[in-house]
Image (cartoon, rainbow, N blue to C red):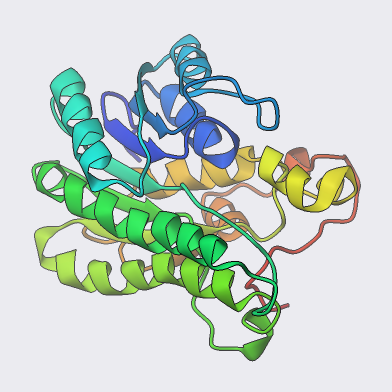
Length: 274
């Protein structure tokens, strides 16, 4: 399969966690990575900034551009896209990774949390896709990849945290609609979701070290993402991928190396039935 060398990849939420891991995996192949996030200054609660991530990506072998952008603001998105095109000449891939989470029931979810999740997850994904579309249309192998789950109407995924589920499924519904809308233009639109929880700073805030010990590292999602983005966009669209299934398709049989704690029992992620 072709590599991502010389391709320009626009990744939201790329200052840490899965977004940064995808950036690093792409950078190792010689990609140009646009590191898009709000984190342009150190945060005592969440480590890493866009500038830190950009330095790591360049050390890994890629070219990087750090752009502060709040995906809730379409003017900031437009400016980030313009900066990417000015620096690298176009955009080949958009990874909609930025996401907000608040796991609570209806009575315990403040409306400001509802608004944040919907503005970042569904609206941010739609707005970034819209802004990148003219540039993706000029790419030889354009991809949009959303970090979102397969769609399911099982009540078990709505009852405990209906607000988050609706917001996250909004990203997945973008895949469902845009894949068909853009099929004739050769722009692939897919989703990727992890089989297990992933050890990130956000997971630590939600479940602490106890849950993180039963997680895999972000690298499993990153390796799966790169495998998808190498594929022919015209032949690979409208799919809801699971990280370990992608890697098995690529011939990877040893997934033990992705465990945050070797040998630990893995905790399944949300939205996936056994």
